[in-house]
Length: 235
Ligand SMILES: N[C@@H](CCC(=O)N[C@@H](CS)C(=O)NCC(=O)O)C(=O)O
Image (cartoon, rainbow, N blue to C red):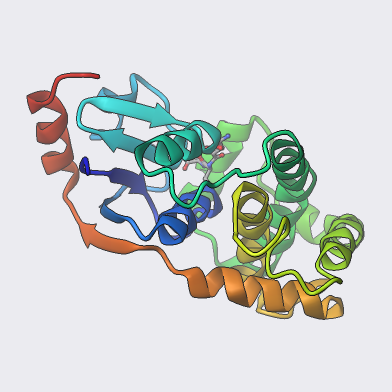
């Protein structure tokens, strides 16, 4: 098996999507902790300017965006497949992520906005092209909670027949896409924070997702990751 390196930081929900994918596969991987704001001097030479989190490195090959990263992980280690139901699995994952990511981030950040450092708020304002305004986030909370309530309700109903994961007995891409949103709300607002507390099946599913873990992780310096890339030949 090739050496798998993930450039990420702990609080990133998109990184959690990939960390749990490693858990599903039971993979060993090296973790490079990157800054959560710019500058990212040891990441830029690898990505050619892409700043988002996470980034996967296999030798001198760099994979940006979690959808691409998940495909690469499946290609490296096909069992169990992350997307055994192509089509419906892709559609479900796309919906979960697109419908729930923004409201989850606003609900999560609204709970911790007062503790976020100024440089982080400025970085995210520049990154998104919009003000990072804690007061506006808090004001938007009722509307965002209503959005999440509808989507979490659908997920909860999907689990009503007792299935362990969204498309059966094995967790896959739809679970990862939904879980990184739920994870962000839980991490910042609490395990049963509104509106999660209304959905017992979803909460039990989130516990099963958390229990999957992150595979076998070891730490690597960003300098060493650069050396590995320099010494390797792109595939
Ligand atoms: N479509 C991207 C989205 C990644 C993304 O937006 N990640 C957030 C962190 S969860 C980010 O890059 N934030 C800014 C940063 O880390 O510099 C993916 O699937 O990987």
